[in-house]
Length: 217
Image (tube, rainbow, N blue to C red; front, side, top):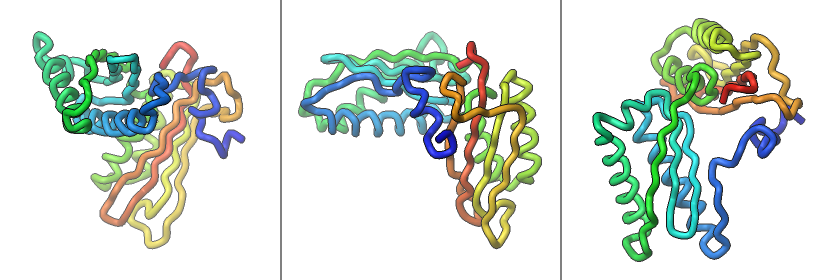
């Protein structure tokens, strides 16, 4: 079971919470689409700040956005100017998406720092994809990132590359694992992500599992 199901899904409410927390029966479809487009826009805009994930909470006429970043100072800016610009960006996003026809929600933005970037699977996988695009040796990439994750206090890490690794003619899988990564143990805090790296030879899939200590999130 652990090999077939996304590790986050089988741990919802036991270890993890939903990234979108709301329910609106009347405009459920529109709200889901708004969440998807807003999350995609924020992940792109805050890429340089090392954004890991975006959580969205909705109430009757307000939207609370929680962004987890590794460099919060780049988002907040001097005297909070960056945060104000981000709020204006989100307001313009809702105006464009709703075509100015519906009442605009009240926006509440909260920036949270990532305690340890090397224990966040998304940030680790993003770093690996960027290194693959720069055509660094894949064995060095796997070894360095695995050692960095274990050095940050992880109980285990598994990294899998799939595709034309190293520019080979035939696609294959390359894997490294250190420590223990028990996917079927529900109580374990397993951070998982799957990202593509678009290299000159084609896409290389990157999957990262990190078994984190219970007090690190």
